[in-house]
Image 1 (spheres, rainbow, N blue to C red):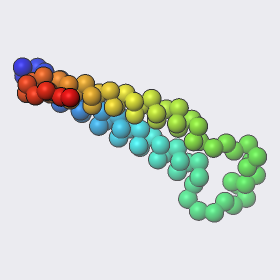
Image 2 (image 1 turned 90 degrees about the vertical axis):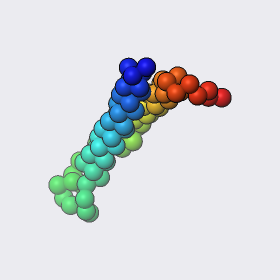
Image 3 (image 1 turned 180 degrees about the vertical axis):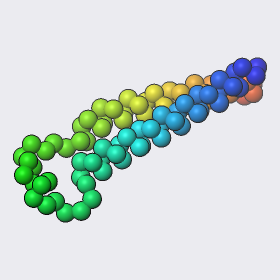
Image 4 (image 1 turned 90 degrees about the horizontal axis):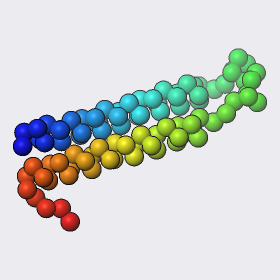
Length: 88
């Protein structure tokens, strides 16, 4: 029984770490893409080659959030087995 409880906590911790990493990576990419402040000459010279980071971020964040959701679901199932509570 203790192993299931530890596995449940490990699932929650992994989900939290994954969501934290995704949030950090998304913030880093958005901050790098849009920068801080108005564009100046060095930023505007290659503006025709600039692409939006949103499609790439969605391709990474959505599966990552799906995995985190699966880990939370697994942790809740293990917790309900451990406590003997039934879920509907």
